[in-house]
Amino acid sequence: MLGGPPVHLMWSSMFNPEKPHISRAVKWERIGAFFLPYWKQEVTVLVCILAGAALGLAPPLFTKHLIDASLAHRDLHGLWFDVGGMVLAASIAAILGVYQGYLNSVVGEGIMRDIRTSLVSHLHRMPISFFTNTKTGEIMNRVSNDVDNIDNVVTGTLVSIVTNVATIATTIVTMFWLDWRLSLLALVVVPLMILPLSPVGRRMYQVRKLTRQKRDQIESLTQETLSISGIVLIKSFVREAFEAARFYSASTDLMTLEVRLAMVGRWFIAAISAMVVIGPALVWLGGGYLTIYGAVTIGTIVAFVALLSRLYGPASALAGIQVQVVSALAVFERIFEYLDMEPEGEPAGRVAPAQVRGEIRFEDVSFSYGGGRRALDGVDFTVAPGQIAAFVGPSGAGKTTITQLVPRFYDPQAGRVLVDGIDVRDFDLQSLRSHIGIVTQETYLYHDTIANNLRYGRIDATQEQIEAAARAANIHDFIASLPEGYDTIVGERGHKLSGGERQRLAIARVLLKDPRILILDEATSSLDSENERLIQQAFVPLMLGRTSLVIAHRLSTIVAADIIFTVEDGRIVESGTHQMLLARGGAYARLYRTQFREDRERVAT
Ligand code: ATP
Image 1: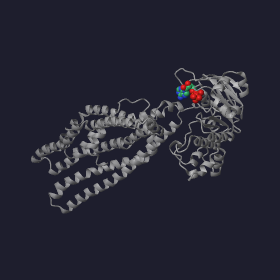
Image 2: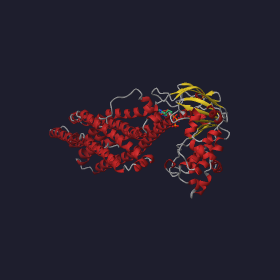
Image 3: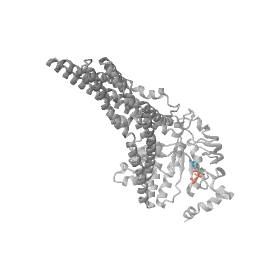
Image 4: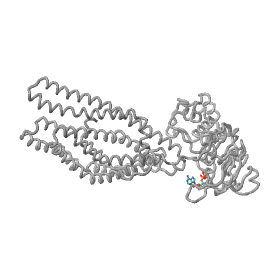
């Protein structure tokens, strides 16, 4: 670090221009806020850099003294002194370099951790609509790749600016102090190194942009095809060869782009390397004349040539730093874009009752997911505390949408949703959700043990509580029969378990949470009768003593419901008990005749 990076690395890193447009969202104070907690380490790095730059000057000066004084006067003492000085300066510089590298890592990695954590926790607070509208691949890219890019900025660009400025300043001062004529000669070649920067940078930016797009494409391909659902799709349609060809083609495009990227500006880098030799040659020429006419000593020329290596590298790196700063800001811009997105449930109220009774009321609620079409249109109903309310109706009628408005997964555009007579928007969001338990058809489990998945319902649950919940959900005997019992890993998304087992685990998880309000989306897929019996039995303790909103697909649930709402086209068209609605002979009776025929037959036999 103290001696500067090798020329080829330096040049490849400086051509990293991003779109030279910075949004107003990127403010220096905002970026600085991430650096502030590490100010002590940063100051120490600064001190190390300055000390390193000063120490770097020592060897050329000792060389000059060695040639002009010690060797010229056959002074052995002087010889030892000069060589000792060189060794000592280099050794201290090396130790400082290691320490600085360590501090750089601490600062860089610390800032990355902080940014990544605030990004992820901010994303956790984003509304569900954000996740339905954004590709998972894109979110992953920002959280991992963009934040990784910041590491280069933190540990690379900033340190590079300070190091190079310090190196150049000290070197130039020393050069002019040694000989002003040779200094001017040495500085002549600097503009030649900077001029071709712009066209090469532009070209590199274009190729880099294409490379990034191609990488995005490959990442989303990988993610989609290697997920459990994707792989099942590939296998069931026997598309392995098709996918392999698609992947090969995208990878070949990336390969071509990477080769192009590697070749951009190669000739320029070659020219720069030549400059590093040509500069000293000019100094030898001018210095040679001056020596022959007795104006400078040989030691001065040798020291000068040694100093030049400390000048050209940092000078060319600094020339490219403007480009690096722009690219760094562009990365921050992408990150701030996410951090500035409004989190869900804003504004949220502060009502945070320890208990709720569980009355749910919809007052003339209308809701649209966007695009003009109304998913709900003037929905009005009340469910008393402790009641079981069943929602029935054709597919796409709006049943799921109704249940999603209670925990504020979405907010209605018109009307109000009330729990215990309080608008859900007046609740503290976390408090509201702590009173609601949700069991959906698509049970999500983490790739972890059964016990840990259940504990998600209550983090501090004891083993006894976990087992009691599993017993109530009719899943304990199954778990106990597994060789590893509660320590069995359920596999990616719980795919090592059957659909029925997963749902019973989900029921046990909600039992542990013990919410006052329950939202239950019954499975439509016909489970075998044994599994269904087990699940139906598990529903009994689940609904006991809670207000339950059930999207009902089974006759047994509907018959047990205190009130049934028939939903059609985003409206509640009927409500009443099973017997009342049958007697009315309306929408429910029609639905009953078609949809629940199989159930009816089964119940009858
Ligand atoms: P099913 O019984 O098939 O699950 P449902 O009665 O629960 O149907 P909803 O899921 O509430 O129906 O959907 C109501 C309407 O809203 C449908 O027309 C659906 O296409 C639409 N919809 C649902 N989710 C979204 C979404 N995230 N974005 C846009 N439209 C949506």
